[in-house]
Image 1 (cartoon, rainbow, N blue to C red):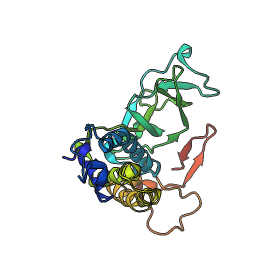
Image 2: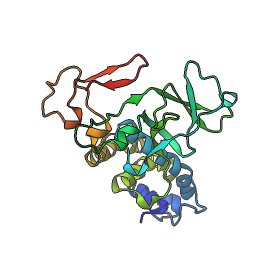
Image 3: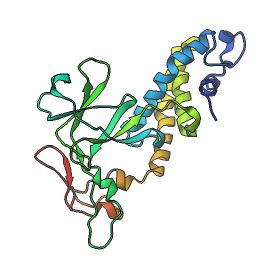
Length: 259
C-alpha cells in the first residue's frame, strides 16, 4: 500500500533525488520530517492531490475512487442564503466535495434494469451553479430543478476529496508524483526549466495516459450519451443507449434526450 511518503519519494526520484538538500540522501524518511524537503512535500501534497482529482474530472473521466453520488437533502432556508439571483433552490454541498460533475435525475439510475414494455429512463443533466455559502465556510448548489426520486431535493455526482492513499491506482500515483515533482524542484535546487518540463510531462503524457485508462474502465455510454443531433455520420454503430433522435435544450436550459 503506497503511503504519502512513498509518493513523495517517487516525485523526488523523477528529479534524480533530493541531492544536497538532504545532505546527499536521495529520499525523505517521512513526509512529517523536520527537513525542508519533507516540509515542502507536506505543504504541497494535498493541494497537488486535489488538483489531480479535478483535472481528470474536468476531462469527463474522473478517477473512480473519487466519484460519489448524493441526494443533497433538505433545501436551505431563505434566511441562511446569500444572494442567489434567479435560481429557485439552494442546497448545502458536502464538506468533502471538490467538484460537482453533474446534477441529474436519480431515477435514471434506479430504472436502468427494466423488462417487457417498460422504457428506460435516460439521464438528464440539469443546470446548476456551486457558490460559497453566506458565512464563507462551505459551498452550496444553486439549481432550478428537484431531481431526486422523491422530488424534493437535488441529486448530484461529485468528486470527493479522498485522502486514504491505500486505494490509489498506479495512474493516480503517477499523476500526483509527476505534478508534485514540478513543485519540489526549487526546494532541491532544480531550475525553472526542470519544473516546467515536469509540468509539461504531467499535462502532455501522464494525464492523457490516465485519461485513456479511466475512459476504458468506465461505461461511457451510460455516463454521457453521445449527441447525434447533428447527424450520425461520425461513423461506427450507435450505442444502444444512444439510439434516439438526438438532444435538445428545454425552456429551462436543461439538455434532454429525444427518444
